[in-house]
Image 1 (cartoon, rainbow, N blue to C red):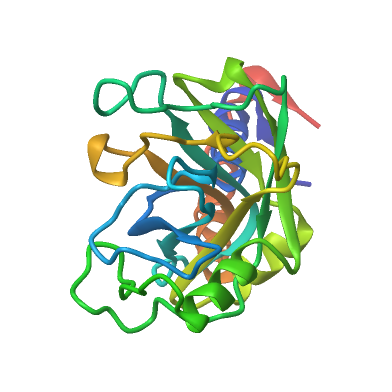
Image 2 (cartoon, rainbow, N blue to C red):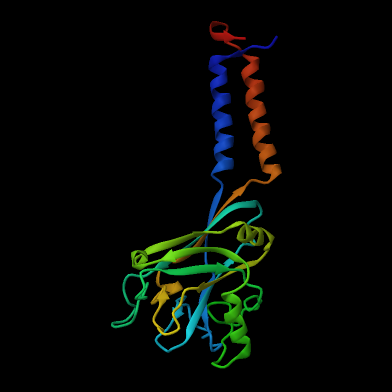
Length: 253
């Protein structure tokens, strides 16, 4: 019969706890490699990094997007949260900022993106080409960013100004994220706009370059089987070592 002493069992339990801690706490934060908007008139400015969404001062409605490079994520993703900074001050005097609606709340929703408008960088800061007002392609992209498979939503209000809005991706979002091997795109739209008011917006005066980490995707993942095997193998070595030198003073069955 083999004996394991209390004293030798302590490192065993500690190693086991370390294994479970590593598995449970495997998380990665990705900064967006691109962000911006398309208007209902089809416009997108190539050099723009403003990710405002909703009605604008120019009378056009905007849907926004966020781009992340997930090519380096090799593990199965079990949870993901989009974090987007919403300003509490204008970029220039008199400009709108943050949440601008006269309504107490607006619904901001995330959607999948089926139009590949970002895979071939064109020199712009957002990996996206410019589209002029009246562009049918730009209008199609605008529609795509605000329709399709839902990834989650957030009830926005003035309380969101000056803070990060966090939206957890639902099962559909996680499935598409795990299936993506390169750039992962997320579309966004305010689904409760009042057509009579063109100043219902969110993320006004928000630019990707104005703050490090302004838009992030925080993902949690489970280590690959090979990684888990290595951890368990190391744990096995601890078991062997603990059995070789039992302490007769504190042996237990």
